Length: 359
Image (tube, rainbow, N blue to C red):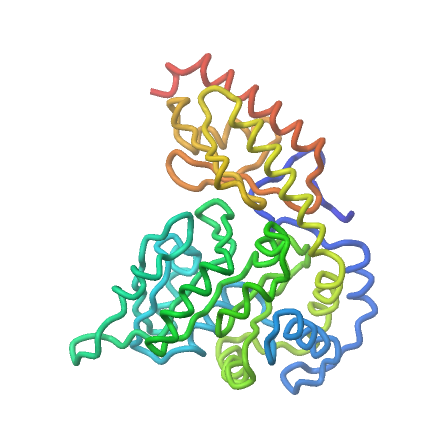
């Protein structure tokens, strides 16, 4: 394991902090390279072929980041001025600097889902009728697993129900599948059970799969050709990109089943936190590797709680005013989870003892 933790710090901020394995680093050193803009990098070509096959799609495209993957895919599925339906708490809407509007020129139409999943009836009602006054609705986006909902899984059955609506109205269905392998491992099904109901999607290499950088877009050949040109427009055309692709190949071969360890650790963490007075966890949302903790019962906001944990060597992330997020990942062991729970208990005791100081 390479650089999984900084000294004694336990980092539960995100699975983006994972470090590559020794095998990945060796693969980078030994990767056969070429110019990927000319489509001459054999390692990239191999990764893209593997990804397309694994997802049950015709073609794939390596991009530097998940945010670029989503932006490229939005632009490849639509034209400027179109309306895009998406879940109100989705990553595309919250965390991608408004690129959907400022760069893609699209109108986001957010709909509140349940545990991250859109209701097909709500989607159907949101589709704008053909009218000179309205932008044309052309795309529906889903996220799997759903980050802000707590790593919840949008099931193949739910996706299929949405697919029926999009096909009825001639819309595309796109999936931000940054953590789609977490969803597949959680339900113990082949990832193609999810992907067969969408037109195209992306998945991340640099989260639970432990690669240093990169995401992959998959879809039919025409879609990927459009995406390739838009990737170049956005500055994502890479040259000797085999150094990114090499660890991605190992990730697809060896790192997917390992995600189950993260899910188990997340459940242990969630149950432990839920047993601490003043903290609340909706255990029904702990389906993969994300744990949302409500700290409002302590009478403090998230920033104060985060600071108290950081003083003790535990890093967690801000979700909202009263909720913090903890994410398990490669490099976090069961011993780390036990120590994290001890740190949380100690921080809670201090907060309770000094409750008058925070007001």
